[in-house]
Image (tube, rainbow, N blue to C red; front, side):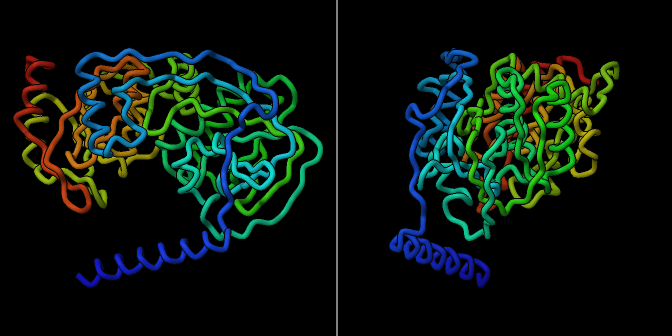
Length: 381
């Protein structure tokens, strides 16, 4: 009770603090590119087609968010992939966001929602001034969410390197946080290894850099979406498989990814699920027990994957071909990995459990999971 009171008090003090900052105009305002600079389009935009079952699920996801900007049941338009050639920007190395004049550029932060919740908008990080007057610079970095989050790295950040690889011909320096995780550096360097004109420069998070010539690659995915055009996901998948020397001849297996060691969104009745899954040959794994290379190999070899919603499901992107069941608490249902599966052609089934408690721990309907197992694998192992 005392802990909850302290948490509520902290939130209220935080809120009052930021209101005071707004009154003294501390926050920078934001704007859109609106035709500034030269825009190079790599691919046109297009509309995705959904089955009725997919639309129903996406509508359910949006309703759990009070129909925020995630209602893809109304239509999901894959935006054009573009590169913006800009003049005279200020690059904020703690987020990857840029400013033009005194305003933050929304397109550099993915969306207004992401931008206004980022450290570029409301943070006191000490930023040391620098200036790059010669040369051309770029970035794929995406706010502080991508510090060490595989979902935001592989879905939001790294795919932007595809645009650089396909459009940039002249020498360019890519700015990247020097404290990036080893798997981030490894995958970025591997994917760009054949593009010698793109040099990666690792810098600290405390730079506010005035840059004369800056290339801004668009984001490939949209907010709340993991969908990537097949050409992009194929490029990314092959690059990551090769960079980690994934073995492609192992026998296939089936895995259940447990979150019982996580701090939240755990399956309360997991001990009822496990015997059912094991009857159908599923191996129970905890991602925390494996190196990242071994996680990728596990997913590559999986012909079926069952898991509660969580960032670890980003590794679906690196399965060769798999059937996927994602378990959701009913209170907040997210379509990110359904849309990821849509882009790579995997069969996806959501199972929605109880609403979940304050930390999203929830109960999964065992009978519904068993029905899926029986229909998908008629013969038990």
